[in-house]
Length: 303
Figure 1: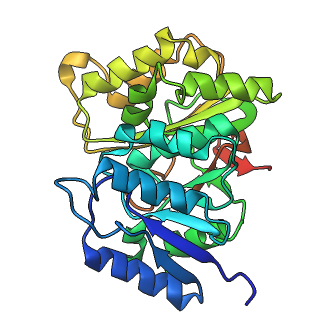
Figure 2: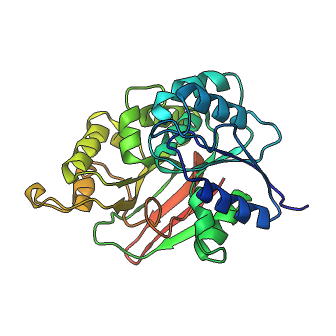
């Protein structure tokens, strides 16, 4: 069948309700796609979906499955930093064939694949099955999983900085990126390898439930570690449930803009991706073009 996909659902981080997995299966199978699950996809091990060794085994098997087209992470939560080194060891000498999809804690995996130059999708997970099947959010998610490269047009934002940039889009959840600094899968390492491959980097960030000053701390880390000097552009997604702190004397978005003030790069705020709805899919570790103008912005994928 044309466009039939073989999907492996895995739970590499937090445990998830079986009903949510069932809803995703029903949606994917309604498209004529074949769905399999990892051995521990529905397990519960404290806050995690299985022990570290169980989750690592499931994920490594899925990413090296030559029959799978897509590895769909069931949810984020927390847990991948416990096993990312095991996954890296399990993938050593191979290039994953399936397309990885997920966000939030799955940023760990996007970063690992980024050091390998392997494209992945920052997008919906099993919760997609609980959304209206005919919604633009779900329909676009399906098209991207089938290989479609979208172009997004955004309205102007008062904190945007105009300009044009090209490079591989990289990043994800800011807190997870911060936690990977100093490791072999850091954003610094991804930017360095992108340069070695002859292309720049455009950084995407989003976050949820962090304190205002935590956002500043993480942005200052990106500044002090040199990351902001290694990127060609910055895309800021949802900053969900982050309470403004009047003692910071600026908004959360202004905090991000101020950290990047010394760098001549285009910046776009308000991209609809992350822990809110609609959560539009983004190709990570893929060539993109960002244009930020007075009347609006455009992000397109050129790979």
